[in-house]
Length: 196
Image 1 (cartoon, rainbow, N blue to C red):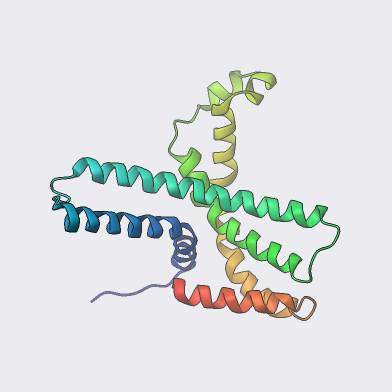
Image 2: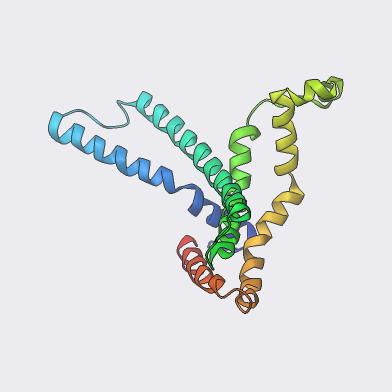
């Protein structure tokens, strides 16, 4: 008998996979249509037993898509806040939209950081301490280590993991001050229901 245990980790991971997997789903549909056309019109053998190289290329492409998609979500959230701060005339729902986009970006922060710097070879503590301040500023390895230390740690993971559920508790009270958050809350509840 299997026991199902629902924890914050599983809820957080399902929300992350909902946001992160969108481009891979589109890519899968495109490749499936391409394989169908190759089989139906040209009679090619499209089984994966004959195409191990294709499987490897598709896996690499999927990882690349997710890396750039999550980076786009993070940069988009920063861009939304910059636009909100610099805009002279903004609509009534602009702040609410920025908050929602930020929550989505924070859900994607951990997978994005892991894909960009988590699997890369990190410099050791001794190597980092031997660098001067100027060398560290221009060292890509130092910055990737710094980013991994800032994002891929237990404290940051716990904070980000609990932001989503806390937002669902806080948003009904925020609606009293910002009514446009009600529309976003309804959409987020629908997305959360479909993600789990």
